[in-house]
Image (cartoon, rainbow, N blue to C red; front, side):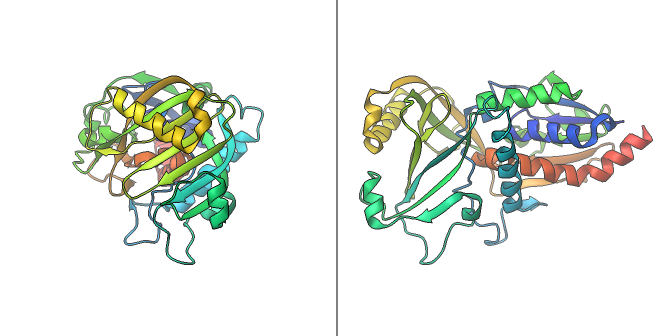
Length: 346
């Protein structure tokens, strides 16, 4: 039996843990280790709309991955997984809903080009000038697209993942790991999904926080999402099964998650300007989270460790939700031979 440790209990670490248990069953003895579990992870604070708007095309430049993997395959696998859950009896318990909406841009894309992810959105189409006006899109946003996609309430989704992990025999350990070397004598395979923690665990100075503020309101009449994007700001109204999220900020290198009433009021004003009926919506709560940003997602085996097989999977920024199951599948492929070898030798 291969002894496996997964560090980090957000979207990525929880999905990696569940996928390995589903694929290898009794061949692995898995422990999910984290300083924080739901509802206190960074992933609990995410919008988790299942499309990576701000990710450059996978074929652009030298790519966005350090190691192995194709973000388009990650997205495809994740949406397929989410669709299966949504269409199952447990879809409601998992906090998954399919929503339609509009995304408008201040800068029109190159003529004739479509976003690389458009084939993974349902009913994708660009809007005419008259249609843009009908959606109350303000001037200064000349280009817009309409489509449907999934949104996941991570406050419901993550606890369900954890329940599945435990049901399959996985263990959990509430602990802050200061060094991967702490674990090499106890585990054959160690998977680092610690997000910002990788600055210490992987000695990676290129990982940095980007603060994102969100306000949650009660507005059950809102059924469609609306997103405005400019080079300097994003205004978003995202309905989920039990609330509507107004967002969002992106403040690089900000480490504080202390609430900001000034920022919250700005998000409410921006959301209400976009969807006027939100003026009567009751504010439920607000929060700030720190996205684990990196110029490239790191998904690779770290050959500097000899006693254990160590894999890194971090640096997803705000797109851990979009890529979580695809990355779990990728990690599974990367470790398939090692798990078989370790399970046979122990």
